[in-house]
Image (tube, rainbow, N blue to C red; front, top):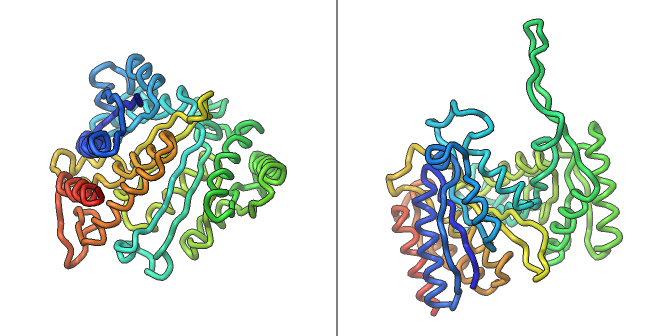
Length: 366
């Protein structure tokens, strides 16, 4: 029996995760997917309830789960809470304590949405990129860090970019394994021209790929050039591996090529256990969107596709993942849209209406 923990979070998180629960139930009824599902709090709602962005009890549930499905965290009502208990601190604790070191961010352009991008159709139609971001090291976690009062009316803010070889090697292997199942092309991205950590990154990635994945075509690119190339000719990339900071920036650029953050899932994976299975946390790329929370307007597709990634990468149910992704594609081909991806001549639906359409397509496949 699989174990799933749902952490809906704040804003539109509870709405979109409610629809994911319906999809999970469909797979249980029609595809024999057996799972126990629990729910708990994370983010601002957890702070309101417990004074922390995630409670120890919720963290214990996450550590015992095979998969954590997360909605979104944050909102303006928590802007002034202490930094260490802000809603986002819950995400950082989940990533750190669960040792989720590899973040997978696909940027896929559905043919039906090619005109929704701010780029020309011919540039992004057929886009299919996988960005692998190192998630538990680098400047977001390095020490020393903090803000120091210099005593002369000035202050100093310090964050330290730190990587060790083992951190680089393990994320390189995750990216390489993905590349081997795709087009066998891997792009490693850093800033070796100005950062020693970037030079170490390039050297360690090169050594791992040359020794363990000789079939792969490995190339290297500076992060600033990569940002430009993503907008210029994004289809030149297949799988990309990069550090925590650059991965944060580049994956957001890639996500907007597709037209809407509401469409994009993500996975955060740890090391494989004795059973060969990697613990994972799966979440949509979009934020909590407090301006539309509670209005049944949010797009649930990113959350639904995040569950598809869980089927594929943790539960090793590739056929089920294909089925769900195909259902989403068919719904879009039929012109069904939520407000964020609405186009002239299409049919606008609510959050519930979109998941109704996906479930209907799944049922037609039986």
